Length: 315
Image 1 (spheres, rainbow, N blue to C red):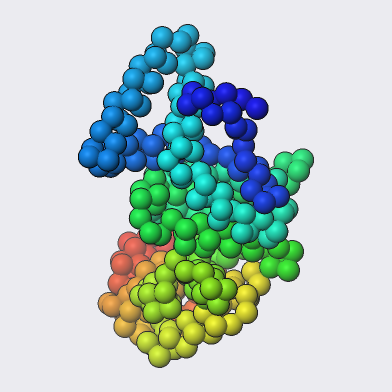
Image 2 (image 1 turned 60 degrees about the horizontal axis):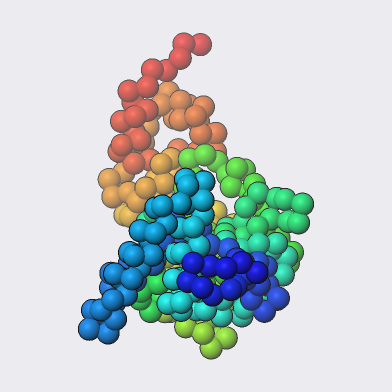
C-alpha cells in the first residue's frame, strides 16, 4: 500500500471485480480534477479550490525527481475523493468477465471527441493491453457511463475469439477505399453495440434513431429506406463477426453508381457532380493507379480534373 497526499492509503491500481488492473493516464486525471474544482459551486465548498492550491504549493518545495510523482499522487487522490474513480470502477467491473483476456486497462485523455475510442495496444508477454481514450469533459455530463459501457463492449469484442478480429484487414483494402470502409465499419459496429446495450437494460451511447444520420453519411449510396433497414438489422440482430462487418463495409452500393450523393469510387467522398465518361487514355491511367476501378463506376469532377492533368506515360 502507498500513502497518497490526501492521507488515504490505497493501491495505485485497482482490479475491479477480478478484471485487469485499471490505470489512469496522469494527464487525464489532472484535467478532470482541475475542471471539477473550477466547477464546484463556491457556496457548497468555498475552500475546496484554495485547499487544493495550498497542497500543490507544498509540492513545489520537493526536488524535481520527486515533484512530478507527488503531483500525480495528489491528482489521483483528489480524483478518488471526488468519486470519479468509483464511477469508472463500477462500469469496468460489469465488463470484467468479457475483458478477462486484457492484462491491463488504461484510461487515457483524448485530444478531441473525434479521438475517443477503445483499442488494444501492442502485444506483450501477458497479451494486448486495453486502452480507452476520452475527453475530460465526459466526466461532467450524463454520457460518461454510456460511453464507458459502449467502448468497453467494443474492447470485449476485440478480444473475443468468436469475433475473429483481424487487425491487418484494412491493409488488404484498396488504398482509395480504406477511409470509407473504415468509416462504414465503425458506424455499423457502433449501431450493433448500442443495440446490445439497450437489450441488456443499459443506456446506449446513442439511441436507435440517433444513428440514422451517421449511417446515412457512411453509406451515402443507400436510399433512406435501405439505410433504415440496415440500422434495424444491426440494432436488433446478434453481434456480427469482424468478417461480417468488413463485408458490410465493402459491399457494392445498393443503388446505381453515379447516383446523387453516392461516394466517388476513387476518392470515396459523397459526390453531387459526376464527370463525363473518361477517354480511353484517361481510363487506362486511372486503372494503372487504381486497378479495381471500372469505367462504368464513374468518377467525380475533382478526380476527373486530377487525372486530366496527369501526363500519360509514353509507351
